[in-house]
Length: 550
Image 1 (spheres, rainbow, N blue to C red):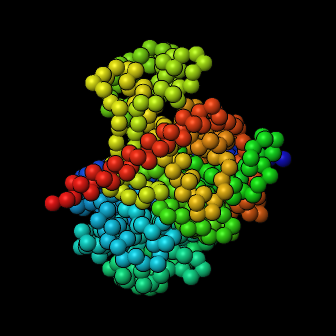
Image 2: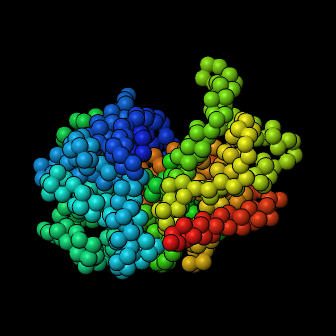
Image 3: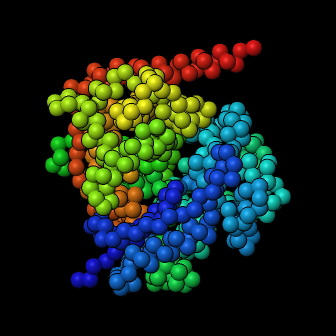
């Protein structure tokens, strides 16, 4: 019997990737191409939907090369939750002051709308209860309000369609304006089954979006993985190098695709605490540029400072809470590459294994092991250097974009050892941030016993081990390292109706690769380090209050 495949397309922060995935969830090939990012001014990050779609077409053509078109049964897209703006003819509308129409995407990490987000929070509207009580500048309502207030003539008045990037991709592929519940519920305050809350949009000054049954932001919705229209249009099929009519599933935000790619795996035989428990005992962590912490529950749980509960936003029929850290991989890069010893680190790593050399983080991990000595845990090297990691604000559980980073324990020394210790302190601070989120979820009624990690940082063994140690829980790593791409392919498999549900596709296509157990000898060390971590936050609050005094 001829092998059948599904194509998963993942649009991340800086690149587009595609994978050819088998019915059993194995990645046959993957392809990646970079996409452009512009930073026209501080806190503004923009992209081009034309550039993104061109790269989607290129990676799909390349990944399906040598495969018969009729072997590809379905396509699924995931993307960052960036905001795409198009006019009535579906042409790009600029989101920048210079009016360059190529730049029509406000990126997820664009924080230009902090002031608008704060004003929306101050309305105390009932929809805020589903975003932890605080509106984030990374959500779409504040970004839309910013565009109306700052680019009214050049952008707002011309705009006829505002898409979340995952929905833009499925529209481009199928011509369907149906939005995924994942995007609208998580980033736009939509709440099934009631739908849009008209009083919210009116109260924040965006009542004009109510026109024509909310046609500018989406009047029809469906669950992720639902088949859209008749599948690929003739034009999109030609662009992608696939057959017209190939099934396309309603899309997901990239982190949620990662959640689908790991959280439903069959764990029998791995002796995990979640083995005899429902899927609600698992937390999926998608760790890349930023990190998302996905917890699901059978009923709605309200967690202060954590987004949700969102019905059917990831797994149909279940409620999702979404914690997160705005800068994780990005923070590690920032700390390491900004250090005086970075050039020395690069040179030493390049000398390791010609011609390509060694990854700088593999080198740092090995360097820390040498510093610790045989028989001693690397973690203990971090006993006198402490970090608060909110260099780009706190998404969860404090939901405060104004918080800043802190480091305590620095000296005048700037050697490679000092760089390695600062790198370790960063990883430990991020892991303690996860613990902070887990504790908030636990207090609200979640009962989580096992972490499921995927994304770029899950390939760093020190990062993974420290997450396990700081949380005191086992970490499950997927068999296929590109779990986000597996999750995107699950959408295509579901849309093709080769599987009857997302749950069935997840269980069959997501597989456990390796389990990392926490080091129980470090339990008291991390309990102490966590106390210091929380004290750093309270000190920051104190000095902020002091400096506001007249």
